[in-house]
Figure 1 (tube, helix red, strand yellow):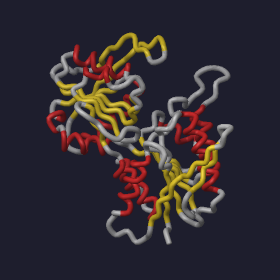
Figure 2 (cartoon, one colour; figure 1 turned 30 degrees about the vertical axis):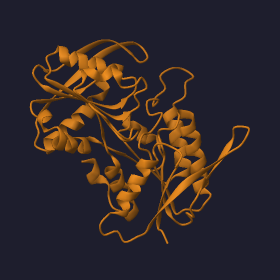
Figure 3 (cartoon, one colour; figure 1 turned 90 degrees about the vertical axis):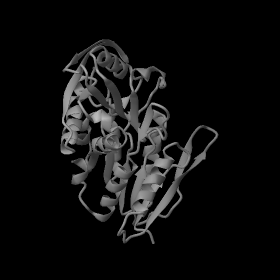
Figure 4 (spheres, helix red, strand yellow; figure 1 turned 120 degrees about the vertical axis):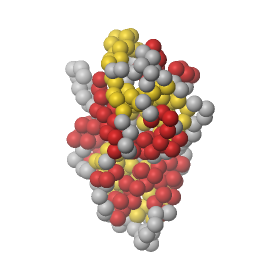
Length: 322
């Protein structure tokens, strides 16, 4: 009998991510407990309503629901609510929700009158039903404080640095880590510290922008010396890519040698055609499964799998944040 169950929706693009996570845990050396895998079944009604059902008995099981971020924003919220309600009504011992990408994280504060804080609304719903949450590279880390349950925010920087050392070691000499905006300075410093732990010295630069309309960048300036340097631009979300492209252009104009870009969550809402300014554009598999040409995908499955395994056996996750 399984003591833990991983749950996912087979009808969505993120199913392979969930299956990869399941395989990682199953292959873990020294594992002394059994693990099940359950699908989410969907029944659609003529009026547009639907219901979701878990295929597996989860009574008294420790459950890990891998919520697929490839769903549309509204579908993402409603499916989350319906699955959590179905899980809670099935008497599990514990409900854990795994978010490869946490939607609505950019709506983390009240920026105008009579507007809601959608990230808090989502956190409130999760806190009602779940016992624990897990994600990676939250756009605004303070969102963790909106939850009334433990909610862990992993960092992709250790995985990315390892990937670069293995696949693009030439980039790591004469390196500058670049933030595409002032708000991402902390993220760039995090990469810089991780590189230092690996014995790689890197400078840091920040791109400042003046934005007049949503998703449109008007002016870009680079603070830091990038002339003759290899530059790694790091961000959490690549949406239209306007900010990232302007940053890449500014770095090239500033005399940068090679310019790579990494964004954890690759939405690419306007496609990949505009990113030719970069020698490499990289993202994780939180949303996209495969890369091609100068577009590369770095897998986070093992990192999530290790976090899930440690939660299953009651081990600390602290070393995963270092």
